[in-house]
Image (cartoon, rainbow, N blue to C red; front, side):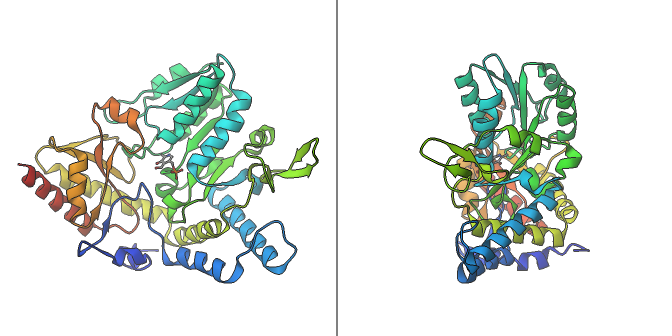
Length: 407
Ligand code: PLP
């Protein structure tokens, strides 16, 4: 779409017409989940209205039809992230599920007593707890790359942690709490000098940046559909074939098997080896529709628009006396986290909500990074392709009112 027309984009998202407490909805909680365009909603409804049946199993017409569109969706996802092979695209329930697959499969196979796994201080609990528990179980050590007071990944400290005991580096592309964009290309290159594989938690990255897994040369990339204008309950784990082939299955059940007897089981080939049970077919088709929608708008256009919103929000909120930004990384995407004087973020969020504005308050499932700043939480406004400058003005006015109320 050139030039970018945000009002035209908004027309595609029916929920944006909703009133909340009699006011127009201003949805600024996109880091938690994005809204869905009509084409995604229609795809889900159409699937249930016309094609619903289980995939990969039936010889009947509907089953075969559903299987074909499901596998076409996988191929489109492969092309979108530029994976070399279709079988490198594993369908999961979301980023959390993808990372648990990694910890339980890659981790249990490769991480042993005395080994190390590296994460950063910016991680969402989803990319922390599975590794922490694995390390505990295996008597391995979780190493944390620190950040500076702007919330930026400290690359020199990271390099110091890499050694022959490191079995995996796993870091977020974009921090959900602060919006910092990590230098993932350089992180990957450096780890590869030590032959260490790297997983990227792309839960936030995928919706703000173009992702080319071959160009990044990442070994794994995980993301969720619902933060990317697609339905909930679907996610992706991209992995290089050479690693996925060696990894044992994570969950057991139907579809991931080849031959089963009471004595033994042989497993299906990639990607099915990691896809036990009936998948969320309608959500996969919805993800496919979201990809088409995003491709039509253009990720560069989306990123440019969101960047404009972020800069404007920073500039306008900065004018408010007593506002404190948490995380001011030079490279940032989609997220602005702040505190208003001594007002508890929960109180601020509750009042802001009464003006029809949805922001997030709390620790954003990233408690350690807020501990770093010695605060219990923040107010977080996060932007998507359909947000407007006028909405930022409303947020700024409301924040000023919150401040006045507490004075
Ligand atoms: N990683 C990051 C950076 C996130 O922002 C989130 C969700 O907010 C997750 C992981 C977990 O994603 P999901 O809840 O979709 O599995």
